[in-house]
Image 1 (cartoon, rainbow, N blue to C red):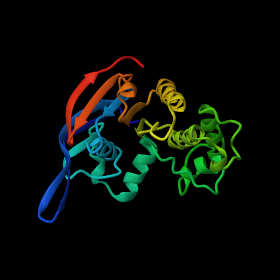
Image 2: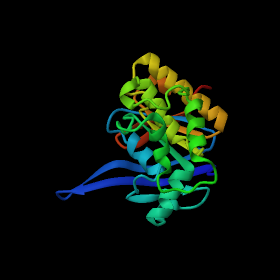
Image 3: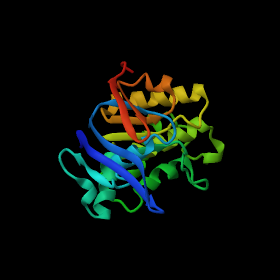
Length: 230
């Protein structure tokens, strides 16, 4: 289990037509397991870029990320995929559910090509019950509300009991009431599993309820402060 993520002088740049664009500039941050952290800022501020780098979905142009002192990003593709499966759960604004698969099948697809030391079907049912979908195992995504679809996506993200949940605008496609339920579910999961939660949002009200708030602008962290207890 990864307890500490350390980002040192992270930069992400894109080059073209002789110019260089900075998506992320000289960012150094430390995250501890059990944290409940919001990353906030306007569109284009580098929030999602930072989250993708922390989750090893992308590689920095320069700088390092250490997970309990180990630089995982330099390892081969298969080792990196194993690390993501074991340590990091992703939740996105788009639910990314396969329309022809049932709720249970959409969760179990996370196991594709993987060996685990527990019963896959039992675990899939367990996490669906955990997110309140015990009566939707055989439903198709088209038969679910937006909030229910996001719960399926969350169940898929927590299938292997990861150390960290990374959520990119998890309530962005939901109405305020449903968004509140999803937020409370993230709070509950953090408390039950003692995982770290880092969520990107453009909503100041939602960000203000985190234990720590990181504010970004133009690819840089401009403020890093303790928030309130969730």
